Length: 160
Image (cartoon, rainbow, N blue to C red):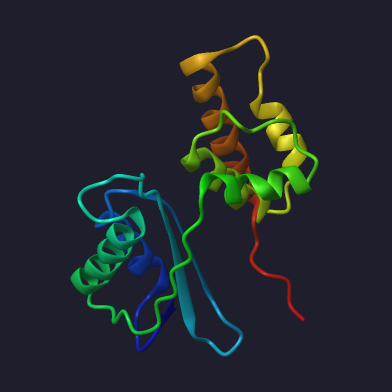
């Protein structure tokens, strides 16, 4: 979503995520014209509450924005199914991610935004000697390590 006025993208993204119980990740940045934007990724499990997941997720983001004083006028919401989240992995030639949770799939796609090789990340997140909870924990640690490594060395967008 685009932020209007004097909203600080970093503070706004953090505040909105704090009000989203299903938040997975927040991204934010500044456009070439100086305007700022944020992107919130949230997991809305099917059958969550009485409303369909998409409506529940939309209501949650609008409420979080209201609590932070940001207008929901420029909000664009794009829901994805688990199958749709797996498609980029298949296109990248990654090994099987059918057992990955929706939050792990989303984090993996955020990792892909760092220009990491998605297939290599999937391979390193898949330890064939592990299974169940141990494998899921290894996958999450691998994804976090790639993101933290990128964040520690990122120097901002290239000029021009």
